[in-house]
Amino acid sequence: MRVLMLVPQLFYSARGTPLSAYHRIKDLRARGHAVEVLTYKLGDPPPDLPDVVVHRAFGPHLFRSVKQGPSYVKIWFDLWIFLALLVRLARTRYDALWAHEEGGFLGALVTRLFRVPLVYDLHSSLPLQIRDWGFSDREWVVSIFRWVERFTLRRTAVAVAISPGVAKAARESWPLANVVTIVNRFEHGERATADQAAAVRAELGIAPGERVVLYTGSFVALQALDLLVDAVPAVRARVPSARFVLVGGRPAEIEALAARARGLGIPPEALLLVPHRPPSEMPAFVETCDVLVSPRVRGINPPGKLFSYLSSGKPIVATDQPIHNQILDPRCAILTPPDAKGLAEGIVTALTDEARVRAVVAGAERLLREEFGPERRRAAYGEVEEGVRRAGAGGGRARG
Image 1 (cartoon, rainbow, N blue to C red):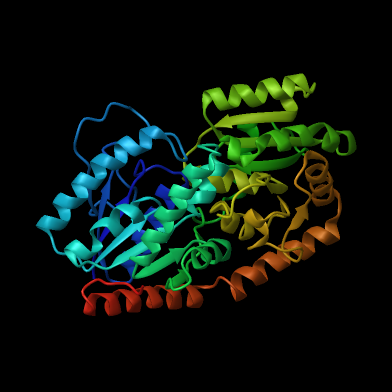
Image 2: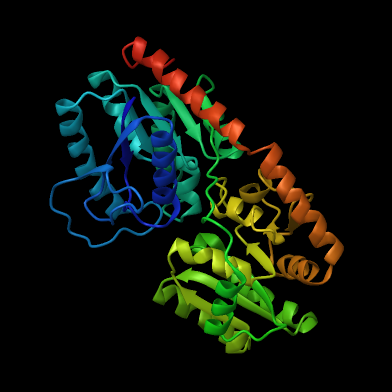
């Protein structure tokens, strides 16, 4: 198939949706499909894909960046990418339009006009995102996005959900939707060597014998890193050698968390806030740690890093919320109440209970092998391809 992938994001950038789109491209190309990308004017060339064709939206771009989550700036960028989409589809015939997030709505507006089957890649539920990211709590605004999601699903040949929770939300929005779940399972390459881990410890000033609790990812408010910072004193009171390392922040986000830590009396050496680092460096940080933690409490779209966490051989501590427990359970992770006290208890368990750690690490290996192995992934992509073929035979029409 010849696929046009619509990515209404800064592509490439090593975060959330752009990272997911990047791995979708690699998966599709590995299956023999030709993939072109249509994205914002801003963004970096995708790594390890030098020959992929990237079309960038034209028009006056009055902003130099786009923050994560819904925003009015994003609406401006989406207007220009929609105009570019019209031009691209008018010039070139594609077998499928694969659209991420709100790009699905833009695709739904044109799928019948250009008779191209639409694959809608859902990373969450649009009306839930509006509330979770603090864009608006007004019911009429949420209702508009609820209608947008339903409209999009009605015109979609295949809806690809990144998790069971997102798939459930899609079916609740439009029961006739043809939903296929393909989780965002992407690891950061091979495990790091002992020398690479030692280099990270030396860089961070972590002495031999000190225990490392690691978080990797963005520092946006949705990640609930405030709960993790609040848990530090309770953990240190019981495990004085514990060092917390949080990797992935921007300067303003780092300063906000540092101020919170100072207010709690946390010494600087106990909480290391590290700016964003390339994904290629993450294996060394993971190899350095004793515990991996994810404190999020809101949303239904599990962090993509969960699967790299699961394959790390390290225990995971995560809040017992839908964002995590649709993938994780007590057999493969230490799940905690969604508050600082609960996180602290879970981290202390991961640092002190060797039998529990062995059990959850072994459970993580089983989960990856039995529930999210390559055979299931290949079968899921096969379902998507079959749905596109059926829709193509019907002139791009979806059911409903």
